[in-house]
Length: 405
Ligand code: DCP
Ligand code: MG
Image 1 (cartoon, rainbow, N blue to C red):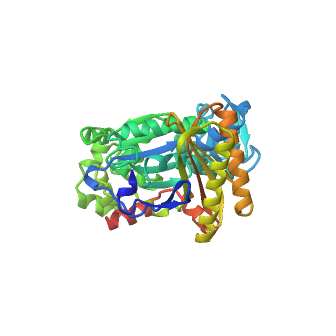
Image 2 (image 1 turned 180 degrees about the vertical axis):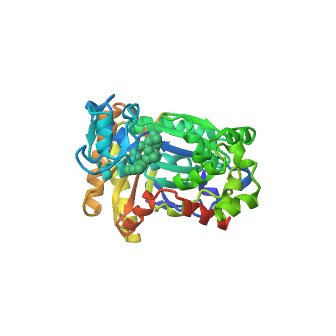
Image 3 (image 1 turned 90 degrees about the vertical axis):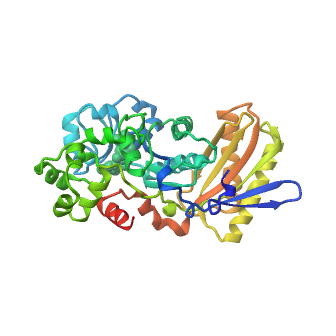
């Protein structure tokens, strides 16, 4: 586990007299893997907003669903289900045009709170495997799994597990790209969408990049793409043939980036500095419990411990997370976010019991529980950071990062 990696996970043990409660403080910023042997996963959810809407409302299953403005409005499409894409509907297209392409499409208003909630749930799953997580947007993140919490040497296997966990816990599919750097992992995740998994290894990256359309390179937007086209560059091998000075003359600093990236060179670390901390507490029991008096008092104990810890740190959080590990090591997480106000002691206890009852009675009845965990996140004083979580990677980010690398 991460405890023996300096800076990866701070861990303290508080003796309560009866139980040893391990308090985890996730601080993810200090650890970085060797750039030459990295194992990176890029995970991108499929038709994210639309899939969440379809999951929450079974009437929408199998239909062309468009999340965005109404057909009469001047709004644009945020997300289109894969069924809607068959009609040529894409994100950022005016809703009026989407309606003309498919009049029977169902238009749904976005519910950002819900997407944030699902995004947090997915991040909880990521954290089971690694603390080095860099979100790019609500539905997309890079994970460095070179060293991971389950000590698994295969990043592909970890990606499969993550995809499975996401499906089990949210009912949604995502696509994973696996490679030895961020650029290649991101390109890879798009290769087999939806519900895809694609690996680019050091052995096959050169062949892959030769055949790739250069417009897929992150940072190559419409303008850069038409400039590349006017220079006769559409495929990777055509970009590869150009000398660095030629590319720098035409694209300035971005030319250096293009020169490097088409050779599969990208030393940017997965940097989790944007990730907000969460505060958690968990306990593995000496014996496995069925849902009942013992389990409820264990949860009370955890809730008390967490509240105490929050007071000490003066934390004001909005999201409560529950982790349950069953006797067969199957682990699930559930979270709940307050629309208004912050979590107080009574609320933590009430919500924790509500979620535990849902999980153990409704979802997994009769299963024995081995571990319970409670955590809080989404701290009130960090609200502004939501903007950075939502931001998309653009050319300026890339230039900045590549320039400093
Ligand atoms: N989004 C948006 N406006 C855009 C692009 C995206 O509001 N122009 C939102 C809605 C998407 C979410 O961000 O559901 C994730 O964006 P993606 O680009 O990952 O697209 P999807 O997840 O919808 O589809 P894909 O399966 O291609 O990843
Ligand atoms: Mg997506």
